[in-house]
Image 1 (cartoon, rainbow, N blue to C red):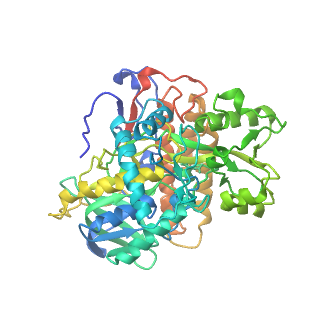
Image 2 (tube, protein in one colour):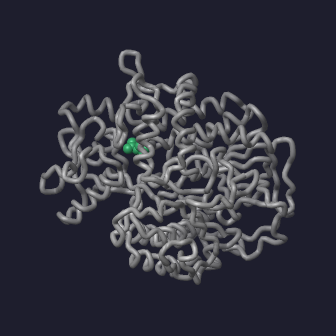
Image 3 (cartoon, rainbow, N blue to C red):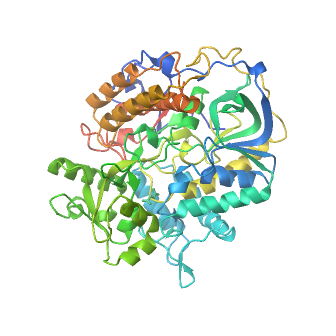
Length: 573
Ligand code: SIN
């Protein structure tokens, strides 16, 4: 289990409703306004329920989420016990499915884990956990080779893996598949193996509402909801949250609709520590055209030589960084933002390298198709792009074995924060993380398999929840309105540029959005929106506390990194 008292390098923010200052931790004082609406936003449970009235199912490993972290963990876990995997929509509804660029691993001749480590640390801006990075880069190649043995069809050139390049990598070390559909190919492979196995039980359309903790302080499963079954309970010896990130907190995001941070929010409500939530990575190049949702234009396109121009036709990246278009993501995103502000244009333009339509269509078929669909004939025409929320470096605080501070509760992939990415993730390290730490979680989880956890809830009653009963009715518009209001606040004030003033306003705005007690609407959406509101508050207050700029967190009122802030912000109830 995580050592809660691990000292230096952390700033613990424990109060549920926090109005204190950082001075006690040896930091210059920063006041965070009290959150008066906290009761509604930070309840123990989302919905009142009576344990004894609900159907109960049992398993050994309960894995939640069907991205790379969930599927791979399930495949490893089934070697040791019964596995149940829950996913809230379809198996393919995940960020993994949309991953384009690929998966980074030091496999090629001339590359090495230590070079991969160096690049990862440079991107992470001083906040990486060194041991976690060492684990990632040294165990990563074997995991990727396992994916290859399982049949993942990575692209090849004359029989050899065709390694691509992405920003801030010193080597070509990105494996990709079907050009720009790497995540889809990996998901297909893992899912095929899960199905062949036959002993992994998968329930789609099942949303995890809350994490359950017994009177001994151990996790014993989850409260879940499914349309036909309604509320129900899963008991498990080991519970793994592989629920992904929270890109949907932002108006513009490259993430699919499912990324509402449910696992992180549920873990927090159950008493888990969350860390580094202020570090949100904004991808520099999402397609930006009226009528089109922001769509990822992979960094690999710049890796193949594409250049960025502002609306006046000037190539601007060499003015900002010696690596120009291949500078770290935060640098490119901020440069684009600056150029958009200077010119007043809603986008900058990506000029794809090479003139031949066939080459571009072959290397980037998904992007090519998407651009054509929205009337952009790349490579002949430039692609209008702007930054969009892409990846959460923070998440549920976990150790090198995915353990959280709650025994039997593990976190994996984007939902987790073991410090591997520091303040800014290196491109294509996220799929790798899901594999490496998924395997470790299964090993660590074995210690719990001999004995089931007690199931006496820590609380005698589940009252005091955000919702007195399950939302019902025909009015999902209410939830949509609230979700949009959150996304707008986050985009405008907790986005790429932040300031104390903007963050204080954001917290006040979020407080006004507090959830009503009874809320008609579609159950999934209502619970997702409640989770978004909680995470929005936690993100804004961490961003307000961090009075410096580091990695993906940029404060206009404190543009430099400060040594005294070379520490993590950990929040818990
Ligand atoms: C991309 O293809 O640009 C995204 C890859 C990543 O976020 O790692």
